[in-house]
Length: 379
Image (cartoon, rainbow, N blue to C red):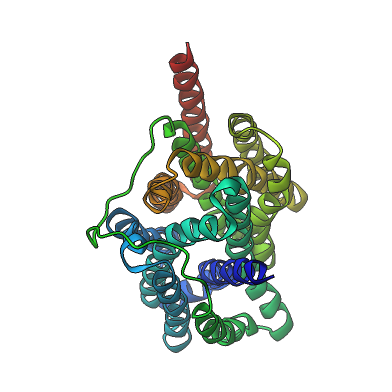
């Protein structure tokens, strides 16, 4: 029973940290309007999350090996609340950039520590189960924040203080206190405070797949809503962001039944297929196709690819899981940010639709190259 409570408490901490990340997504256009900025600025604010996260992963991904797992998680909870508080007090694009940096730092602290911690609590012999719990909690969090704000805005009408923000402000102090009750299950290591990520041998294709999959999710979350707004469909942004992640959560039990390589292969098929359907939906202003394409890409990104990649690096680095998880997320968040910013620049220069088409070409070429190189290395 005590183990169940610990697992649940840790999962709720991870959920809440990631819940804060996309909480403000349905209000992007409001913050942008306050500062009179365009598509490039919005995608820069979106990618500012990675500006905070990437250095944290690169330099502090193994910090929890030195100071314990609980402290990084507690810091991440506080950063999520602080970032949201900044947006409440100063609802501008500049504040959004700053808040996203704080959220990135929080995620960079929480995900490596939380993944290693969950494995230690559940048991090292149940690595895939631990990976499933982590991916489920974080997937629900990443998607749930945007949906919660979307629902709040639908109930309250236009506001800069939605109920979803209030829920976060209530949850954080409760979980912060609950974190003190989490068990001390890890042996601290006498290592440097600054620890670089670790990339286990044979995991490059999983990392590359994560970059590809999450770049598609990044486009869905950051750029597609701009096109929806242009077609008077902005009210569906929260649902699109939620589906972009939640459907992947629903697919994770299926992915668990597959071998990691099989799950990864299925992801490679679904990523371009889903984006193609989404693109057709956006181009024809057909909401059903937009939602269907979002669901397919979600299944690929946060379902089959995410679970396979996290389980693989955990299994290949039993004595260095925190740093190995950091290495995986370096791949993932490079894909999550760089293509989105480039497409934002293209959108301002050549239009949103042309930017979405350019990404489709890039995605197809990248998928083909990764699969081809992987096949050649097996020969």
